[in-house]
Length: 422
Image (cartoon, rainbow, N blue to C red; front, side, top):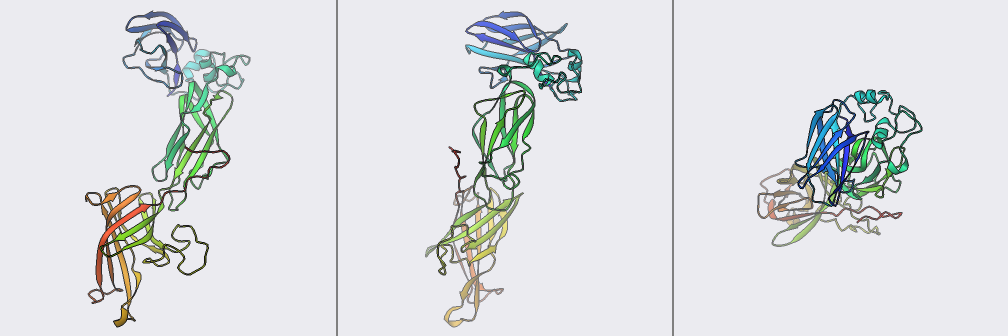
């Protein structure tokens, strides 16, 4: 669907000052105590669907409740809108024209035929500016010596400086706005100072996006994998090209947070408190869990020593990665079980009997004593120790208690080369 700005009015301290776009003629203006009325003649035949928007700064536009547009015939429309309370208020009318825009220059074929431009060429006169942009800027799309100057080109800016994209939460739309309509491609680049890598942390970006109006979105999609990574960032820069200028906010930082993480666990009963490490990896509604211990497995910094047992995670979990069984992982129910883990032997009376330990970890949101959140689980655990693959032995025993799992805080992106995050 193509849009064309038809008319803009400016109200300054009760005095109406009007001007027109796209060869629009404002034939009459009535400034009344509660209403403003415009009679506008416009050159676009066949327009029947209009939208009225208002702005106080030419940057952010929104619909005006109560505004009406009436088609009077003979290429004229009447615009009626409530008188604003702001001392300065800008108005614009957008008309739905047609989806028949073969060359994608913002002008439907029927409009191009009315202006005499080529409906199959983006830039009929070859001066480097699209036909749609020239119409909006008020220059002649048929004269190569008539083209927008730098001062009347649309200005493109990011709406904010920093945003957060989380792996597994879908795509993030980064908005760029123009201070007036623009039709064409907006070009951008990924700054080499970015710590995030295209194809690894996020889907590779094309470097441009098509614009037809006053805003556009650059979509950043984190890659949802099963690898635990520190938080990274991608720094986007707007690139200046023919047809638009770059505003003050020309850069944007997207922080990319991982949904895969290491967790610190604590098991508490009336006799003792024991710690362990758990790795949870999530991708496309699939969760993998692994009880981990030892240097290079537990996600903790490797200690500068080769002494046995130097890792703070070694204990009830043997060194390595013990794949767990995930029964449920949702906002309402979390339940996993460990595989059988070595638990020593039967002691003085059964020294040759190997024992196995298993853990069942459960959190239920409907239980008032339990907590399920993105950064913490509080629930219960059941520990079973006995002879492997055997039940009913006098060596078997069961222990229960309180479970607490806390997600490790992600490492923030490195602030290098002057990139500073709030």
